[in-house]
Length: 71
Image (cartoon, rainbow, N blue to C red):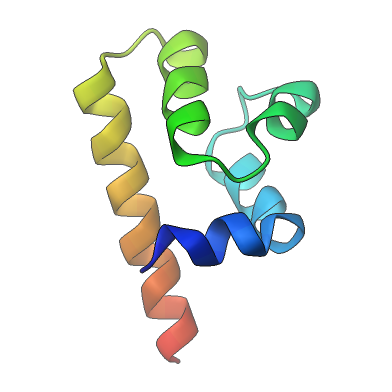
């Protein structure tokens, strides 16, 4: 899935991101505003994970969302 789709439709994806990563507070989601790098950084902080781990989580999220759009 093209991340630009997430960024361009942040209002739609914000809830999906919150459901996937409930440790991210609402103010963080507002600051992320669909930006992948910001999401990665916030995941690292909220979950105490490495950049690589955060990227893997985001890639998995993208694959899940891509599958939902194809249905």
